[in-house]
Image 1 (cartoon, one colour):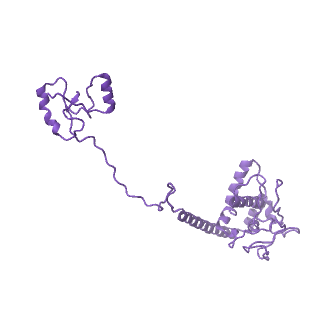
Image 2: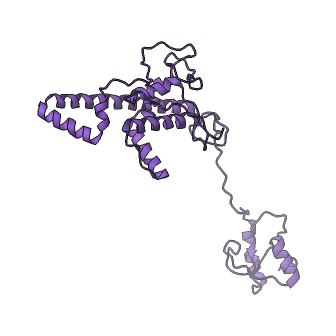
Image 3: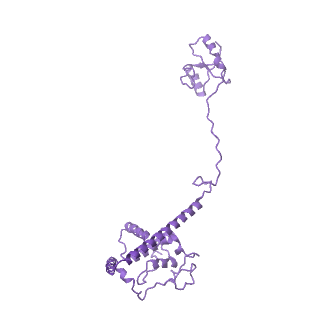
Length: 298
């Protein structure tokens, strides 16, 4: 049996061996390859060969018979290598990252706007078809049936009898064919009664001609939903005059669309072209409009 045998271990285990004065047998299958026991070898720590177990109870003859295992190379713990990844090109991402790519948001926004315009055009075509169908149905009614339907409509909304009446003196509702004032830029403004209301949208293509204006400001279903939300939020009854209720709600819709939510007392002047587009859609039968009222807060 050799005079010097080596026990290979880590620094922490070596410290524990020096403090306790004894070597405990190895039981971990990763280290005790040939079974539990104390593993010793003739090779010092600089050699790269596997250890062979030499339990303390073995004789010198059995120890020499195991020397053939010492010549096997030590493979050591295997480590998995990471596969190299191809570099990702910057500036071509389609989703949000860490701010290193330019993305494709402008193209996506353009597609959404195009889809919105197409949906609006389809809705307008459908609305016209519904109106034509309604006119055809009315044309097939007898005078007696039309009179009954008209009486029911007047009972529901007496303001309908005022529509054919001429406008009373003092009303102010210039028509679209009137002269364009000299302070107008878009070409669709009309004269306003006060100096503070003489304001144009300032665009070459008038703001009142945008598809979103028809959908968000003038669409009666959108206005009805907005009035319901406002009524439930502020807890008050809606205006009995449907035209006036839609007209005032359209003013609020335009302010929200153009400026966002404003605080209490913060009022803005709506451009003349947009005001008269709203009033043409929801007119007052006598041409009586409140107009712009300054806030009491400043």
